[in-house]
Length: 427
Image (cartoon, rainbow, N blue to C red; front, side):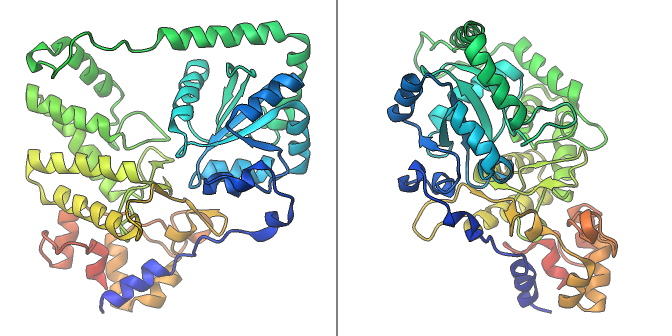
């Protein structure tokens, strides 16, 4: 068949549809903001303020702590917390009685996000979005979390438990909260990196070899020899680690440094974290084997992954790495480039209110656009089952073999024309 079929496959995923149910509610202060993400919260029952002096003056005047929520428009768990809590009248009433509530778009104000993400990491050792901070009217944080459910379960407290507790502590143990806030602020101040007294380029010979070895040893100690990557689930691609190892290998000729890179790049390229139909990499894998992704796609991930595969190609000359770079960049130019100029920062994980729906396929859907021979070939190359390899009988496209082996099965050259993923040659 022709390229028409692959266009059908790519178009069959549901479009992003915003429910009008929230639009009937009165608008809050976010209705006039430039940020689309903030305007998405303009009809929440939460009495949101944008970041600014008005909010902090209100907190001082009304003697309340500030609830700061930082997120962005394509963040899956931001949407979940919004549905469960910020659109819920019961939670909103509790928030409005206890806090002055501020919403921030991290893509509009990365400076604010960076400050409070550092605070969250200092307090909890964890970071992510949505970022939930509770702080004083003079902007000193004393509580940090990421996603918080409406009600607690499995040992995690929910909004309905946290908010009354914070309100109680604010009234009866405020000195302890303020003391904690001051300690956190002092910790952050001590952790600031001081500027170098010398200007100009760094002398390569001055690099501390023992420091490089410590970095290498740290990565090697958490390397997953079975699946590639570092640590367990959730597993992020972490291309910066791969770039470090490539440079370390070039400098030291340590074979294991290159092996860690290659095993990881090949495993990710075959896994569900890579979009085998549309190109590009998803945000991270929810499992340790790169099979089930969190389906969001970030522009900066595509840039860094393209760099990692490019440098791996330069180091090894293996065509599969070059091919992956071209597919990633083709995806960026096709789907993440604005007709008005510039690039889109991310693609949402959700469509029609469900995470990953656009990227999931039932076997019968594939049979509708492929003939019997094509479908037979597809299941030789990809991990697809009638019963599904994911939830509700649906399949994530996961390659069964390396790019080189797949090309051999198809009887085509490993060097393919630009813009055509391996799935193109099935149809």
